[in-house]
Amino acid sequence: MEEKQNSVITKRDLRRVFLNSLTIMCSWNYERQMHMGFMFGMSPIIDKLYKNDEKRKKEAYQRHMEFFNCTPQMTSFIMGLAASMEEQNAKSKEGEFQPESISMIKTSLMGPFAGIGDSFFQGTLRIITFGIGLSFAQQGSILGPILAVVLFAIPSLLAAYHGTFLGYRSGNKYLAKLYQEGLMDRVMHFASVVGLAVIGGMVASW
Image (cartoon, rainbow, N blue to C red):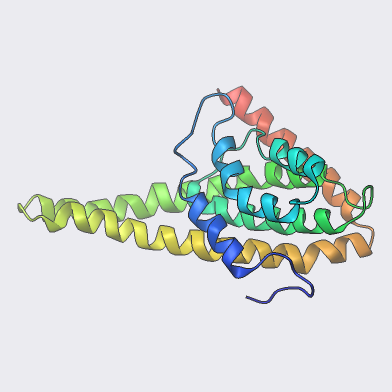
């Protein structure tokens, strides 16, 4: 993984984010859905970045307890991106970085990523892999359920693992450039519009 100079977050930290992200559905609820799982995934990063700043640590925990819902396999990318943004926030003096941009980026990405993830992992991969498993199970083979789970789990785990690092690298590559060129306000405006459209669509459909 290509890390930016003076990076605080290490590969080990991102692996912990990946492992924590696997539990994201364990606390799903009807109020904020995956919010506790997302916060748990981000906890190793938050604890490390803000270990000497209790005020900003509490703000970060509150920030990641907001509503979140996305395909589990795609969530680690957003966690990696959020980790990069939290790192930049931690390194910046108060007022230099806009922490609300982290929430806006999360909200704007969860809808499109859920559409892609649900179509591929739930609507395509799961049907194919469990179809293969079912054909073995109909013949009385124990390989049926084993194959179904393994064939679905391997691509899911690979996508989640590499997505964590890809999200972090993407943040490193583009966020600093956006701030330097004064484009972050435009990105935040766009992200807020997309986020409001996503939430509005969910409210209307439910």
